[in-house]
Length: 300
Ligand SMILES: Nc1ncnc2c1ncn2[C@@H]1O[C@H](COP(=O)(O)OP(=O)(O)OP(=O)(O)O)[C@@H](O)[C@H]1O
Image 1 (cartoon, rainbow, N blue to C red):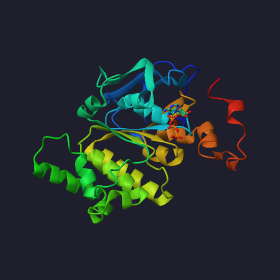
Image 2: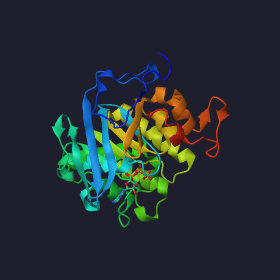
Image 3: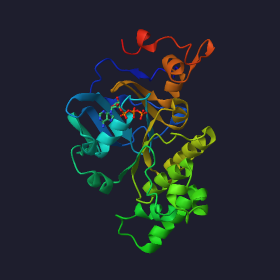
Image 4: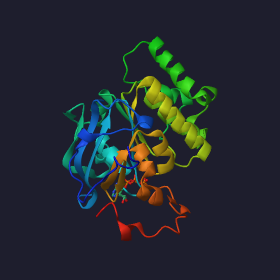
């Protein structure tokens, strides 16, 4: 398959989902027949009754995959995740059009706790640990809704520590005094403790050193492969996200402007130039990049 052949550029405005042609190359294979777990269909989000932020976003998340939601500052990634998890109300935001379905059932405008019961957990941007609790107490809060035995919960705690050995070392430390990377691990570990089917992961690389970012993504990959957890991750770091994801959507100003298998997006000239800082003439600095808005090749 020609590199970039399966990348789909979206016309304005983005239309409803049409994922029947989902194609994945050899490097990024997941089950092509995979069931769609999460379906976001043409949603519009408005804050404070007047600020239109999402202008018809559609995306599909297949079971067992890592799907990346990419885009720069303010593109609408966090808003999309919050719309899925029903967390917009506290910010005076609402989904005014479209639908969100999980396993075919509408979940938008529901209670955030219902989605958690269905196995969907969001790890918010900025980690949000309980600062006064220890690392281990934070992890255990993730199992709060489970009715399993103490032994099962202990087994899952051990599993979390096997993915994050650093947390085992720091299990008695107050979470508020741990580093940014450790707090990211706590937030992810706490999500795992709820035995999720799907994790919505918001900006896992935020504020972390490159080596740690790589480590966090490696762990995401291992959890995906070994535990079968499905991921939808919002990420500004296109380079790292497209190396670990199977499929990507690029958001701009509240619209999906392009989507495709991650390997194809990595080879796409526009993605290379505008998101990876590369072009056929070599690496480009942000300053050198011609105005993307002037060209708008994929929007025309
Ligand atoms: N509570 C809010 N009230 C009003 N506008 C908001 C609110 N939250 C976000 N916005 C606006 O919505 C737009 C999208 O924001 P969002 O946080 O979803 O983007 P993002 O892609 O996640 O960006 P970043 O990577 O910087 O976090 C931005 O213009 C932002 O200012």
